[in-house]
Amino acid sequence: MNAAAKFVLSNQPQDLSWNNAHQLSGDLSEAIVDLKARPGKDIAIFDSGSIVAQLTDLGLVDEYRLTLGTGVGLFKDVRKRRSLRLIETRPFSSGAMLLCYSPDGRGEEEGL
Image (cartoon, rainbow, N blue to C red; front, side):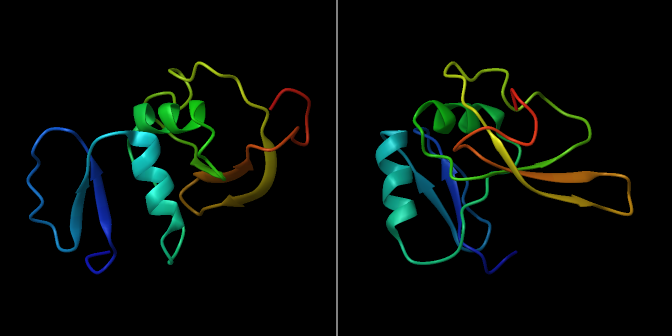
């Protein structure tokens, strides 16, 4: 994790003391489109439902990977409802469940 590139989305100065951390500021849509155009692995967002809501509204999410447990509702601030298609499930020995969704159509059940 220390070697992985990390991006902090903020228009305010941030402490970027963690190894390989970078700040993205300005227009969120432009910053993410630029980041997605770079070579490399997938982009993951941790613990920021507000960023996920904004990226969902902008149509910039390629896949949702959800681990069920406790926390703030991921989609509570999304204004533009999108259909999701369940593409993978993975249970963990802890009892948590990873659910992977693609935002490109209906899932296994109507209304996902």
